[in-house]
Length: 322
Ligand code: SER
Image: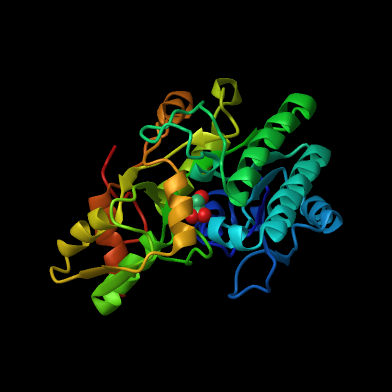
C-alpha cells in the first residue's frame, strides 16, 4: 500500500484529490500538507512550507512516504505579478520535492501546464513534442520543472511523472491567481446572479478539463506501468477547448437569460493569447490510456447544480461512459 505525501492539499486540485486518495489508499496512508492550518477536521495533516527543505524531508520521512504529490505552486497571473516569489515557490518547492524523493526513493508527481507553450508553438492540437518558449514566469517555471523532473529521472532514477493540465474546472475549492479561473467563476456567477463579466475576451480559446477527470488522470498515471511511459514527466491532457461564448451558450441551455459581458484584463488576456487553443493528447491516450469522461455539456450540468446548491450524486461513475 502506498503512503502518499500531498503538498498544497487545500488548493484547487488537492481539495478533491486528497479525499479520493484516502478512499483508495486509506485515511492514514495520505498525509495532507499545506502552508495554512487545516480548515476542517481531516486525516493526517501537517502544516508545511514547501520552500523549507529540511521540514519537507523530515515530514516525508516521519510518515514513511513512498509517493509525493507536489501540488503547491503559484498560478500564472499571480506569478506574473510577483515573478521572484513565483520562482522561489515554484522552483524552490519542486527542487525540495525532488531532493526528498531522491533521498527516500519515492515516486513523485507534479503538475505541469498548458503554460509551458508560448506564442510560437502551434495553436491548434499543439503536439506533445514541440517548441516550448513561454513568455510568462509561470511557463518558465513549468518548463524548467519538466526538465528538472526529467533530469532527476535520468540521473538518479527518481520515478517522476507529470501532466500538462489545461484550465481545471471545479466546485470544491476555487482556483486562485490563474488565467483560466474565469471558466470556474462563470458557473458560480451564472447560478447565483444570472450574469458574468468576463476578463477573457470573446473568441479566446483555451483548453479545459473537469476536476474529476483530472483527479482520475493523476491516479491513473501514478499507477501506470513505467515501462510504457515515454513522455513520463509532462503529458498533454485536456477534455475540451472553449472560449467564453461557448461556455455561455452551454449555460443558456439551463439559464436562458444568462448575460455575458466583458471587461478584459490586459495581463490575463495577454497570457491567454500566448497559450494553445487546444492540445493534442495522443501520447497520454497511447501510453497509459488517458480518456476523460466529461464533455462541456455534462460538466456544465454538474457545475451549475453544485454552484446553485443542488448537489448531484458524488459517488459512482459520472459523465459520459467511456
Ligand atoms: N490554470 C492555470 C492558470 O491559469 C494554467 O495551468 O494559471
